[in-house]
Length: 553
Image 1 (tube, one colour):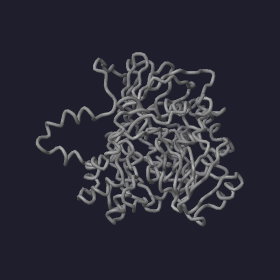
Image 2 (cartoon, helix red, strand yellow):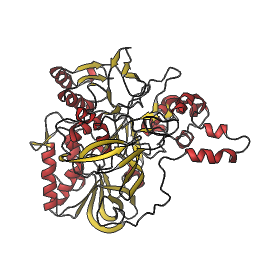
Image 3 (cartoon, helix red, strand yellow):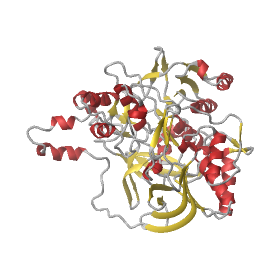
Image 4 (cartoon, one colour):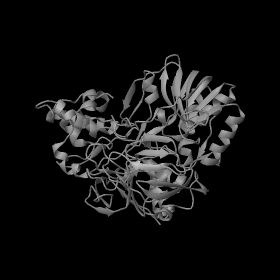
C-alpha cells in the first residue's frame, strides 16, 4: 500500500496510536493524529491535489505553511464545511471528506485540462482584449461561472465567533527561535508577555532543523523554553494568526480550533506597549521550465514533511539551491535512504568548504556551478535538465531560491520595506514606534546574531548560544534563465502567471508594479504572492533593465 511505502518510522508531530480515516476525491485514505491534510495526502502517495486557475494544469503540495498556492480543497467534516481549506494548515480529523476544487471531475482526471493546450490563445489579460466585441455582457455570466475556487454551500450560515480583549507589555508574533528568545528575555524582566504562534506547537524551524542551543537539541530546547514561559506566566496563544497591526499598537489575532466558540474561532484584540514581529521568512522558488509540476516542492517544506510527519517524498531526489539552507535537506533525505544529488548554482569557490566535505563524507553528489533549466514529466516530475545539458532522472525535486523576510505585519503598520541587494531580499526600512522586527523577519541569517538581536529588542542581554554549523546563509536572487522563446516558467502557481506574461506586460507598457499586478494577476491569489511576488519583481527588473531597488514593491 502506498501509505506504508511513503511513511518513515519517525515523525515528531505524529501520534501513531491514533489512525485517522478520510477520503480524497472518493478515495479512501489513512493518516495519523498530528498530520495536516497535506502531510496525510503525501503519505498516501497523492501527488496531484488540484488544478491551476486558468490552464487547469495539475498541481501538487508545494509548501508546508500559509504560503501554499496549490493545495486548496473542499473540506467537509460533520456539520463543518470549508470550500477553500488550505491543506498545509488544516489538521487532519477522522472522517473528513476532501475534494479537489476548480476541476471538472477530480484533480487526477479534469475534463478541462485541455485548456493548457490552448494557453497561447489565453495569455495574461486576454479577457480585456477578447471580450470587448460586441458586448461584455454576452460573456460575463459564463466567465463568472468559471471564476473562483471552491463553492459555498447556499444553505450555510456563518456562526458568530468568540471575542477576547487582552493587554500586554510585549506582544510577540511568532514562536520560532527569535520569538522564543524574545519572550524569555521579556519574561525575565517581569514584563507581561503574550506570545502568538500560527502553528499548533511552538518552535518554528527548530522543530525540523538540527541546531544545538545551550547544548540541547533544538526540539528539547523548545520544550524547555515553553515550560519556562508557562511557569513564568506568559500567555501563549497557539494556532493563531496575527492578521493585522492597527493604530495605538493593537494586534488583531484569529485563533482557530477553539472549543468555546460556535464557529471554532476566537478573535483577539491585543493592546501592547511593544509589538515584536518574529514571523520568520518565506522560502523562494527557483525558476525553470515546468517548475510547477507535482513532485517539485520548496526545500524547507520537504524537510518539514520528512522530519515532522515522517513522509519521504522521493527515492531519487534532486536538491537544487543557490544558498546554504538546502544542504541540511540533502543530508536528511540521504539519511532516510534516498539517493540524493545536490545542484548548487554557485561556483565551487563560493560554497563553504566544510559543507562540501560533509557532502562527500555522506556520499551525496554535488554539482556546483549548475542550475535547473527544465523539468520533464507528463503529469508529475520524472527528470530535470541542467544548464550543462545533463539530464537527471528524479521522482522528487526540493528547490530553494533563497529567503524573503516576512514583513507583512510591518508593512501593515506603515513600514516601508527597502531592497537589500546583498541579501537579495526586502528588509524593514523605517522604524515604527512600538514595533520591532527581529530574527529572520529582519533578514538575519547568522543564528547567534539572530538570537542576540531578538533578546536585545525587548531590553534583554542574555540569549541562548548555538553550537556547531548553523544557519549562515546568503539568499541571492538570480536572474531567471528565460532567454529562449516558448519556455514555460511559472511565477505564480495559483493564477498561472508565467515569465512570458510579465514580458508581455512590459511590451504593452503595463510595467509599473501596480499595473503589472493587476494586468497579470500576479500575487492576487489566496496566497497573496508569498512565493511569487519577489521573483516576479526580479523578472520585471531584468526586463526593464532597472535595479530592483528602484522597481518598488
